[in-house]
Image (tube, rainbow, N blue to C red; front, side, top):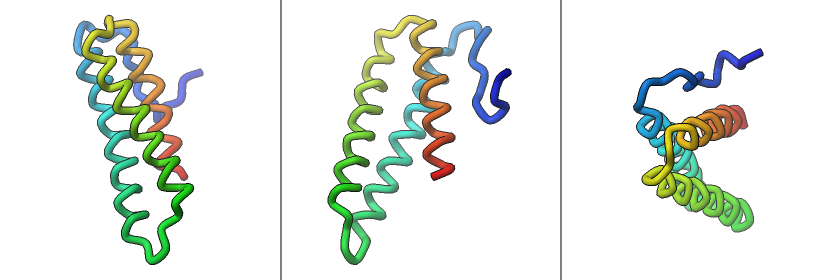
Length: 91
């Protein structure tokens, strides 16, 4: 059974890389927004900042990997990041 909140990228005719890049970009934006908010806090949580920065760095690395990914790998990355974005938004 598929989760209706996670986009289904299966069966796409091309464009997998663009779809994956978009969802990875959304995850990077989420991390960047959280990092900025933590910096603005009266007393920033340094441990949380490090976790957020590590998460953003991992997403940026996967985003760079998309440049050479085949359609199947791009679709896999899109699925992973769609699930991650859903989880991040729920937290």
